[in-house]
Image (cartoon, rainbow, N blue to C red; front, side):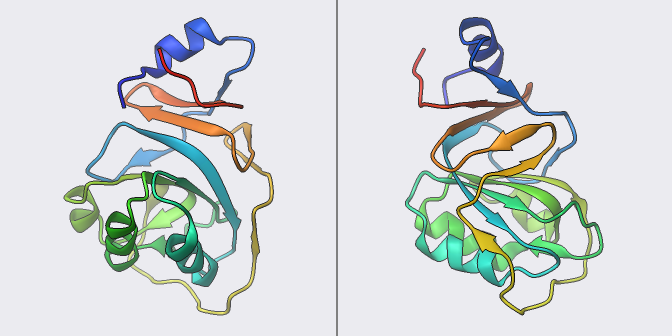
Length: 160
């Protein structure tokens, strides 16, 4: 990603939504961007897996895990599938595990924290809805830009 979030804020201030600084970067890729696909779950990652297997390459998968820190919604196995499929990255309102492995993978991963416990496997939740966390609305199809300075959302893809 060659676009800096600071430049996006300067040029598109009236359209840009800036995410609250609540995430930790766990992936090997610190800068990533792409169209948003959303999934809402709670301590259950079955739908996360389904999204990883179906979203187009270049997508940023936004996972609203309700902010739970009790179990992980992403680990090295699912992340490896995402890398293989060309997914740009994850923004997870929840936790991850296998962080040493995630750090070596060519994928962006932002999450609230880490925990070694895996999630349930019930398949509950929702896909493709607008979700809200970190002070912004995550709208499917809008674009998200991530770098070391933060996370910026815009209604469209932009090139600077």
